[in-house]
Image (cartoon, rainbow, N blue to C red; front, side, top):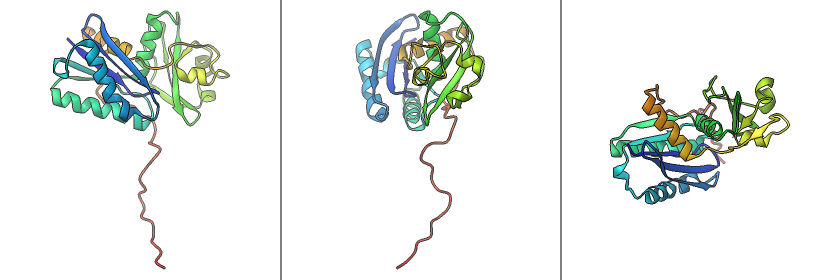
Length: 221
């Protein structure tokens, strides 16, 4: 196995190559408004560090969010095109699950916790996890104050927890999705035979720009 993973659901564009046993290479670039410009160079950089070309990749994993519409679409569309061109399997990974795996693996948490990422508009994408990092509910997009009190009072990882410390009283690292941990999550899921997600993005809400369904009248002078 040689798996390429990448994610564009947050302010970071991140990618990694995993050989099924260990991480070979990873890279990240920051630019919340530049996912389209950053993704291809980041993928190229991580493949170069791994010493492989695209044709050597046997599996592809992409973070499917939740995340802002524009950034998330860049990653998902790129993953679909690459998987089709290379004729390899494409695996979707909930981006919050990758953050949760990193938090548990690095002992940032030792009991139930939540992942809260920045959803903009003064909202967060949030989901609850048990001590093993298993997600307990579907991700939701909420105002921080509307997240259940017992969830907000538990340890919270992700950038959203750090943005709203008055609501999430115990924010912890990591803050952003790591391509390395997304790859590790995908490899573990493949090895265990778990039911895998497809590449359907988890937008959770409508995009900021929506085409009008009504025609505007034109007033002639």
